[in-house]
Amino acid sequence: MAANFSTRDISITHWQFFTDSASSVDAIFDTSPTPGQIYCSNFYYKVVDFLDSDPSHTVEVAWVPSHLGIQGNERADFLAK
Image (cartoon, rainbow, N blue to C red; front, side):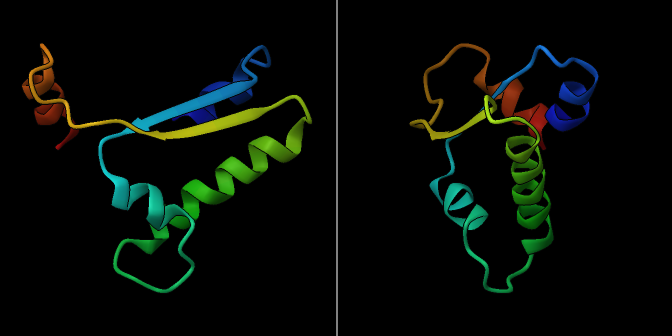
C-alpha cells in the first residue's frame, strides 16, 4: 500500500512502519524458507526498490511495545485481522 501510494506522490521520501511483533521485524531480514516468507520477501524488495529509486529516500521499521491500554487498540487489532 505504501509503495503504491508513494509512486503516485513523489513528495513522499520516508516510509515508517511500526509493529508490536518483534518476530515480524526479524523475519523481514531472515532469508531462510519459512511459511509466510513470500510476504517478507515482497516487503523487503519493495523497500529496496523504494530506497534504490532515490538516494534521499529512507525507511524505518520500528518495534513498539504492545498496545495494551491504548485507546482504540481492540478496534485496530480487529481491523488488522
